Image 1 (cartoon, one colour):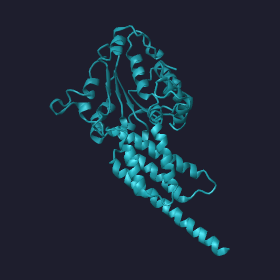
Image 2 (image 1 turned 90 degrees about the vertical axis):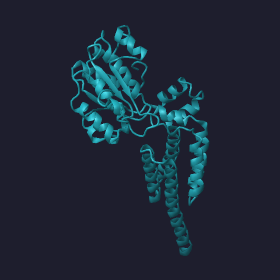
Image 3 (image 1 turned 135 degrees about the vertical axis):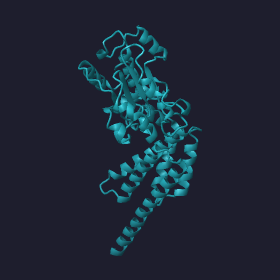
Image 4 (image 1 turned 30 degrees about the horizontal axis):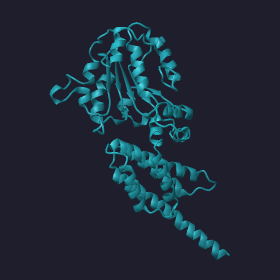
Length: 342
């Protein structure tokens, strides 16, 4: 465990070797499941790199120098940290080149080009790199192509495939694995999210190594709705209108924030994914179940693209209904055929 961060000692050693050999890249793309510690790792890495006393290859800041004290106070002049604003679907260009009245006089690209205050380097951390739009990516492009010699940029995303080619091709990818089940469960209990070990383990087992997802799964209301969803998916054909209404109501109950509703819908569709994958493990899975699983995965992609949730729910439920009707029809034909042969 490095600086309280669990599960990524291999990445720590990777950076130690890189720093010891003097081969630190100018731009890194951190990818992996959400909620596994990529952002926290980035901040601790920046802390180590900005310390002016200890050898940076050790990745152990002294905590006493002026640079470390300013870092701890949250106002270090050589650290830039930006992310997706709550009301935006993509990273706005103002974060990179300033607003209309101060173009190229403010923003990350301007500040990262300035000389470090403490003389060693400047570090910029860009959270939510999955949400680069073409305009914001173009604003950053020149900095990526010609980075200042003292600058290091860290972009945080979930997958290289979700990055624009202009970003991906100019970054060195560092992969973060999902955390193991016991680690996720311990974090849930240790942070006070849940007190019940059984619930923590259940959430951790379905979290795919993501603490963020596990926090969502720790909500008891989700498990009640999971049973309701399982019953609805077991009916053939599925009543798409009733299912869409139930899902929409449950999603709306997550809160007023769009991020809360999107997070809950992701979990709901994740339950459906789990159900269809379970069906596909039987000896003779039905082709329609494969198509239903693909529809679930497509719906998750639509959520990530900030599509209208109401339309996502409606289309998803109608697709599942159509696939289940196909199974129902073929089952009736099979039953009729068996009666005829008898």
